[in-house]
Amino acid sequence: MERKGERLLFFPCLLSSDRSKTMTSQVYQFGWCLQCTREHHFFPPRYFHVLSLRLAFKFSLSKGNKELAEKLNRKCKFWSNGLQWFDGYGVKVLVEIIDESQCVLVMMSCEKGYSDNMVSLRRNVIGEVMSVYKESCPGLKVKALSIDPEELAYPVNTPRERTVYEVLDLLSAIKEGRPFLVSDKGHKEVKEILPDESLSDISNLSLLGGRDIKEVIEIPEEFNIVSANKLEPTIQKVKSDTNYIPTQISESDNDQQKDIDTHTCTINDKVQETHIANRLLDIRDLAVVLQELTSNQQFDYTDWHQLGLYLGLYERTLKAIEEDNRGKSKKCLMECISSWLKGEDGVRETRGGGSNWISLVAALDAMGEREVANDIRKKYL
Image 1: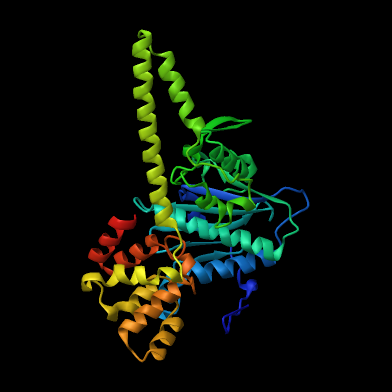
Image 2: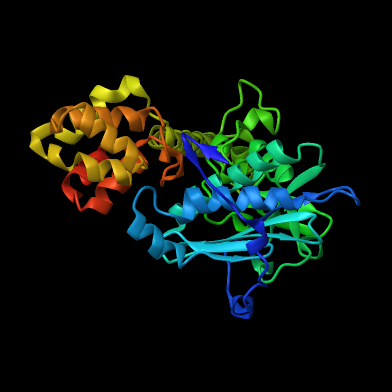
């Protein structure tokens, strides 16, 4: 396998060990799987070899820092059909080929207060699972499933024996504004199935793995995130519970409508804020980002190299920037942010999923640049 001039050697024959028995007592908070739907379809060994290599390279190992890579490598466990790692940002991930090679299982858990990191990382991991599937075995007939959070006891050998929900059904429920998902096993609130997920922006759900929502389900152009279906039951309930004279009913309805309008505006404002925070910035935003970083001389230009690492740029990229600009810190910072805005190297694997305000603030927080981070957070998050 080659990546930007580097040649990586991988020896799948070394993955012969069994899963550690200590792992059977571990607890997870999220479960997702890609399940073959035909009896004689299965994921070939090459699929797991390619997938495990990519996951280890992108998420469990440090980019360009050999010493840190060795430390993290000790925290990444491999066995014959799976791997597990802790990303250093509060999230533990397990990926395993199960059910006689008919299923790819992804399970995650996070430390308290790090659920946002888990959602961001699972978007990227699911994206890799789907990407390798399309490259290695696109002829397989598969469907994506989300495992009920109450049935995540590990190991999961056969997901079909657990309560699972088709991702397509979940997306349809969210699109149509239905708070409950109805299945042959009963009904359950969508928010209980995806407790850490923001359901206000369907196009940014982690279950999509970074794919365009239109590739998965049909979304009409006029689709509004705030569905009228969510508001109608509230109006009907108010009317049925009202026992005043006609004039009072009219006034009550008007007040209720005002409350609903206000509530709708509030939801729309929050959706807009979420959109701004998650929106990927591009090279056209270079001046704005530099202004936010350097206004009032808050950010030290000489820290550009460290910022670049936290933003997901590789060491070789940063060294090239330094050599090209002969150590001129201001110019180096500009080129560093430019590379970030272009989504180079591992930018998409950082918290936030790419070059947006979320990932920039996370990088600044990690560096201890609290003042700059808080100023940006107040304006954009």
